[in-house]
Each structure stands twice: as C-alpha cells, then as structure tokens.
Length: 170
Image (spheres, rainbow, N blue to C red):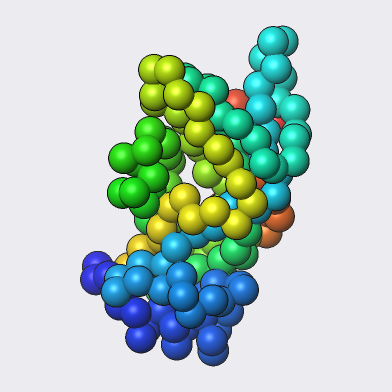
C-alpha cells in the first residue's frame, strides 16, 4: 500500500471524478481537505437524531454527525483514510476513529465529530475545512469491493448508522 501524492490526486480528480467538486486550493502534498456540507444530525433528549442546518454551535462534550460537501468515488484499486486537520484538533474538535473508506466506495462521507473542550463552544459552518482525506493504492484487487458489500454506497448528505450491533442492516 502506498499513499498517492498531490499530482496523482489531481489527475484522478480531474480525469476519474475521485473528488467532486475538485478545488485545487484544497489539495495538500499527500491529502485533500474535506469541507462540511450544510446539514448536521444532532441527538435530542429522547436519543433520536434530528437534522439541523449549519451553522451550528457544538457544545462542550457534544457529539454530532456531519457530511462532507465533497462526493468521493474511490476506485477499486484504492482505499482512503479521513483524518482531522491538526489545526481543528488544536481548537478542540475531535473526529472519531471511523474514517476508513473501502475500495469501491462512492458517496458523501459522514463525519463523526465531538467537542472535547471542557467549557468552550465550537462553531460548525458549511464549507469549513475540518478534515483531510489520504488516498492509498491497495496491493491487489479485492474479491468484492464496497460496491458489493457496503451499506452506505451512493449516500448523499449525512446519515446515521444503518446496521445493528451485529452488522445486520435495519
């Protein structure tokens, strides 16, 4: 497995729709910045997810689900990893460790975000750069790609979990 770099990301975005829309200023040496869409799922007092529009103020300790503005098409010869931008971590944002993307995935990426500050709130604004995505080539093709096995294929917008505790779809 090897990480692809800026000119490879740009080529795949421009010629194979790896990232849509592709914006050159979001390209880094070996990653691409992910920006927020315009919706957030917030847990209410009954434990149910309620959709709100951004902007939204994230309270200390609060956990929400967000979506990437970008739509990704991960080819079957790549995998990807979403990571929080270090500047956002220094401000108190946390992206939970659910950032792995299988070969063959297409869709918006749901981001699991928490405010780890004790007292201060954090803003969530549409188009803010929160995370970055790194793309890696896999050593050999999968027997079955995410196109055949995934529960979140072609998702648009933000989505809550679609499987129970045993991985069975609801």
